[in-house]
Structures are given as structure tokens and as C-alpha cells.
Length: 291
Image 1: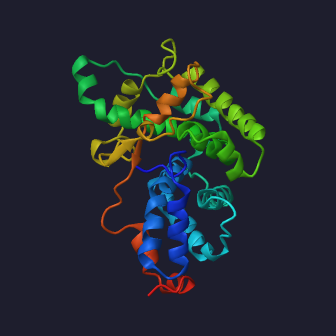
Image 2: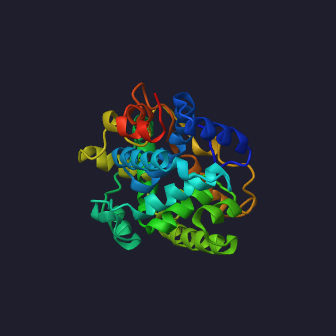
């Protein structure tokens, strides 16, 4: 998946597509939206813990981008302008998780503790391997949901997707120092919880994904046919996270960051995509004089 916030991304390609789009070129607008849609969706997916909510939120963002494209003044990089819209929309959304376990880290920890830890045979470890990965990603996604919206978004962009702190500061319209402080606070809350609960970062912690997986499958909460996070048409975040993100290199925090970057991302949106739905909307087409 293309990461439009990586340093290697070229500003001129976006500028040209925006100019052509404003002149009514539907193909240019299609290319511009398709370029940014996967990244927006995957950030939304991590923000909401729900693929359906992520699609709705992505569509709302893209509608706002299309209807406000004429307001882009070319004074800054298009990606900065676009992701300010993304940030504002994600932070202002009224969607709240309907799952009470995400109220706080304390409540979420108690929820995990209440899931049994049945013994596993070697055969069961193999049998539950893929479902266990689903459990692990879902659990860690739930940890992110325990952060407040701003902390969650800063952590997702700053650590999971590895954007440069200066770019992050521009997008959030704060100073680089303030961005780093906010990111540090989000890390601290998240990592403190993981240190106390997660067996992935500390072997002495009792929580083990395979054992929880067996218990949840037996109770009907997990099933190989209904996996949401461990999906087939994915790439891993680490495959395209910015290689220029140096602040965490060679530190103990890399271990935590790597766990989140290992999570899949959705790239294949099928034949009927959000882009297709938007560009067939007559009202939106009128905004850009698209034929």
C-alpha cells in the first residue's frame, strides 16, 4: 500500500493531479482519491476498531476533500492540507465504540483477565494459529481504543505509520515539540498497560493470545469464517512505514512499535470502491465540473 505521508512521496504529482481535477478532469480526480484512499481507510480502521465504521468515516472525509478541493491554495503540500481534514474529521466524529470494554485501560484489563486461559496441546496451537493472530490483532486494536481520540490518532500516525514529527506537527497544527510530547504520553499509557498485561512484551505476564483464542472460540466469540483483522488481502504496516523515522531506532520502544506495525492493512477494496461511489454522485461531480 502506498504511504502518502512517507518522505519519498513526491509533492509535484499531487499538485498536478489537483490542478487537473479542478479543471474538470475526472481521471485525475479518480487517481488522486485512489492514491490517498487506502491510507485514510487504514488509519480510520485503527481509529474505530470496526471496518464498517472505517469505510463510512473514509467516505465522509473524501466527500469533504472533493467539495473543498477548490479551497486548496497551493501554499502548502497537498498531503498536509488533506491530512488536516482527515485529522479534524476523525477527531470530530461522534462515533463512539458501543463496546463497554474500551471505556478505560483498567476496565479493558479486567475484561481480558476474565477470559479463561485453558491449556493447549501442540496440535491445538497449530490448529488455532490463524485465529490466534486474529485475537492478537483485535486485542491490540482494543488497546488503542482505550486512548482518547487525539492520543490514538497521534500514536497511529506517529508510531504505527512512522510519519516525521515535523510533518505530524504541521498536520495537527502544533509545534514539533508539542507533537513529540503528546506522542510520548500516548506511548506511556499504552506501554504501561502492555507491560502489566501483555505476554508479547513480557513473558511473566499471564495473558497468552492462543489460550484466550481457545476460550473465545469455545464460547462462540471467535470463528475462522468471520475474522475481521487477520484478513487475506493485506500487506503489513511495516512494509511501507517510513524508513526515515529515526527517533525510536535502537531503543527498547522499537519492540512495541514493531508489534503494531506487524498488523495487516487493507489494500484491495474490490471492484466497487468508495471512489467509484463518490464519483458517481451528481452533486459532487458538479463541484468540479466533471463530465
